[in-house]
Length: 128
Length: 509
Image 1 (cartoon, each protein chain N blue to C red):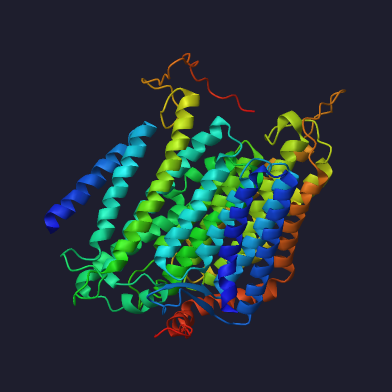
Image 2 (image 1 turned 120 degrees about the vertical axis):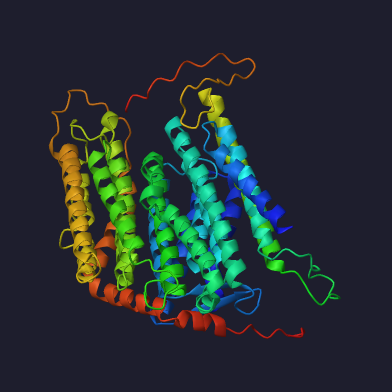
């Protein structure tokens, strides 16, 4: 159980870090999502693995620690909201720039929405 | 008294909700609501400051649970000081945004209030997880505020900023989870007690968690390898927003002080779980040098301001890592926040005054208010470079006095003096280019934007704060020393753990 759990977290975090280091904002968002799954599992396991009863009901004598579960819920909600915001920013950015490279460089892949003319290649911004 | 403690968080949040509902109303109505809420925030911060200055530690048990189990808000001298600073800078930034017409965009006011609530909550919370929550609240608002203005440079900067801070939040969660897993509590007060008794087998794990936590706080405080996002982000933000952001790095410094110097006693090497007396000062020193050289390399006054915010964060980290340096950090935090915020506002005024040349550091015809702005700039430069007689000098003197005799003290003093020289050169270059080395005005002078004279009010408020810090340096220093004493002697923790829930009529305890 522990080995499975730990390696699950490890794989999620490794994949997340790999994706975050890539240069397209879509990959980065995916990587952040995977990373947050890994972190949530990790947080959850801080209440110890082992399958005692939940604290509701009051009939069991041994309970699992409810605090990590509360923490995970909060973390999920916050992570979800911020990721949604990040997606909106990334989407606005890639639509107006025509590329979803994180540094705005005209990469290999150009994002073309239907009915959109190919954007002009990026010229370095003249300093105002 | 202690119920008042929830207001710095609740009042801005209620105001933000109201402002969202008022989105169809005229801008004047929204301005009025935001101003009223912020005035209330200032009043509450002031009254909390007065009560904390008398030495009271106020504890509010949210939900009426005893301290280590429920959510707790704590007000001691450090929180009250930072809260007052937040109120002053927040009010000045809001007035600047309204008079400078940056506050007309939809939801600016709502986001601004949420930002205030997040900062206030981070300063008041008594446990690690709520520190995370309030960090997220203030970050979420700062993402929104940053996006106003909306040119592509800013969107790019915000994308990097959001991704970077989101990764930081994941690290924070991991660290908080590990701390809970090892020690069994997230409450600062209980953490300080229990962390000393952790079994030897678990100490390495706890140290890992605490170092992770330090990395997270250094991301917020923009310490060197983790602070490279700051100049681009702050340089791209609208001036009032950037002025408010000058506070955000101080939240990171506050967290370092609260958790490491306060709860864990990490600055007393003999009893400590984790000795930070080498890491923090040098991380701070390198950040300071980077910021000071960055100011020298900037082409815009805004860039200079952003680099100097970075340098001040470095100075603060340096002070926070010294055993006797907490008082210095407290005093210098106020000075550097006020001065940094004022420089951002001044850069905006200069930008509008010089028309097409904006705040670029190259000669141009003098603007209409070059004389007034130049005078303000001169005062600010004296404060920022640490020259007598203003507060920067007092702060630096306190720091250098503290460093003599410390480990690697002389090397750190050399770094500080070198950085001061670099700051002074950057500011003299900026000042002489912007205000002295002017070209003759062309016959028909195009005025790009008239900057309302009233917008200089908030600059005046910040300058008055700086002058007050210099004039009343004695009382401020005594307050800072008492703050350090209170933070490190564990009296706050005892007060938190001793706080009793109120008896509730009609319910068995």
